[in-house]
Length: 362
Image (cartoon, rainbow, N blue to C red; front, top):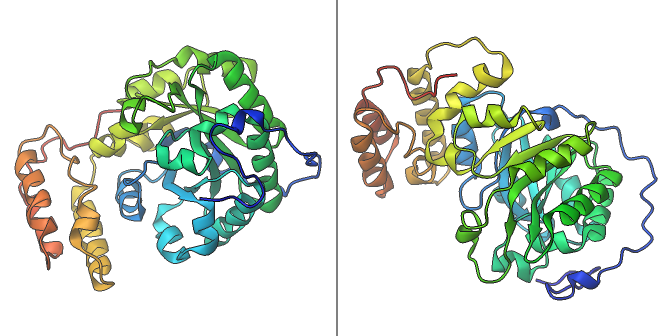
């Protein structure tokens, strides 16, 4: 993937020098509503598509949702409705962009804002080979000046919050100076928030999956960053398995971001609104969830989609409840067959003995 303005390879990023980009121009006034969400669901490639986000929104009305990363070039030149379309119920929802060309990112951000996204996020954390070949993602940790230029351009282009998601460092970088340099640059450029995955990324030698598990977590490094920037919104991501763990992190930082735990055991999201947003604790309405997802699936099928596009994100909903195994079997087999309709989803739900519900206690 070629970039018009900055033709960088992963090996050349360390040599980048920022052009004299004026960051002093007043950006448009920022609406900080989505930025202030204390609990977010991480952007996850191949997982947090529009169907996943609609499902998650049925479980929590307040958590900030993120798209999968969408490359800026694809936003500008691709099928925008397919890439960016979403249901209004998903708000608040943020668009995560991948790229390293400030001009292209600014244009992609403008397009995302026009589609109605509440926030535009820049990916500085993905370690995959595919992302590195385009010179964006985690390899940008090596060029904080370029990241700052990207943020400045995006801030000038849109009125919604512009945020960044990064790692604590890459390869042999010392996480302290590396994270500080990145944070200083993006906040000086006007970033409204910084979400930090509290692990290093190793750009060679580890797969993307291994990069989510093998590098050790260093939550204290993120806590120290926040302590040094009390007026800035800093959120934490990486290895958070429960709402209780998220609550502990919120004693040190401004936001907590759930990733794989939210996807594999989405029932925990039913406790988010009461635990973090002051909603009244009450039994979750599974009947309403069944109706909402069946209606949504029917609309998707009418538009030429398949039931499995929706239900693949719902397999882990009833983890630990009686009947959950049968529920998973139905969604993994019957729901993936050609011609499967919403009745399959209702049959799967009927296999579960709800009892106290799938929601994690607040």
